[in-house]
Image (cartoon, rainbow, N blue to C red; front, side, top):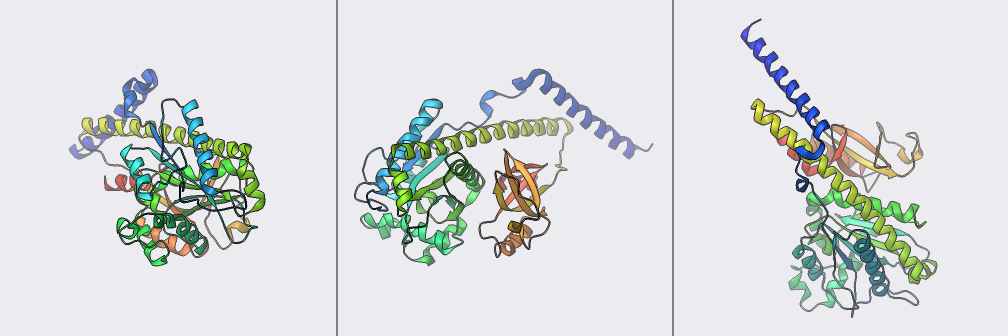
Length: 383
């Protein structure tokens, strides 16, 4: 045996022994190896009731958006305060007052919120349109999504000198919305997760018609520095839906649905952070002892095209003209993806192709079979 072979075997033996030692230590002593306060916890949630004061929002035949969403927001906050007393709930408004868009995001940032939930009700000239929608920040992919964003952003025109305050942004000009293509950032994955959980609750626990998770350019989401969603709880322009939205029971159901989504999101995020902190601690210890450590696992980028609480056959017409579809079950939800590459630029090229068939598809990342954020994926690939 030559000296080079001996060194290689020695290194492999040292690495294997250390990993085994770490596994035994973790098994025997549990959390003692990891400080309790190292894991991430959701401590502050900001709930934003849309519109208010001189801005009534969308108008139904006998109701106003600003009143409905305020009631739902207060009920949602009440549920969080009751069942999670350790979580601080901050409201952008608790009464019928007008709050500028930039002030709403300022409240969230100032309080260092971990999650921002903005609640609205929708309207359309077609009174037959109904259903819930949950938005995350992004570039609109349909004219319909753009119309919703324009309606909500038009609130800024109630403010004095709004054009200067909002950096020349014109809520009525589609060209102004190109800026949102660059603003999704590191909170995108968490925002989408919360949005998916919310629509799941609306559909399967409250029995509402879900129009799904969407992306659009909302100024109030652009300015916040944490995961955020904008919820449209229904169409006030639909007589049947307006009747439901006006009732105390309907508002209770909607608030409790968002609360259950928050509860599931909180559990998911906090459990993930504990796992990641343990993995990172292991990596640091190994690197310190061995002297060098390279990640032999590869990050996998895919395009998510569909999520559902029920399993969808891969030969379903839903996936018509798509190849190599992969089914993954994450937290009880079936996720369907296409494509697989370690090259982020390649997956972006594929996304542009897939978007011609499925407008709301988006990039997701996996590491060692587990879903991770895009920012984490890029960080792993740098090591």
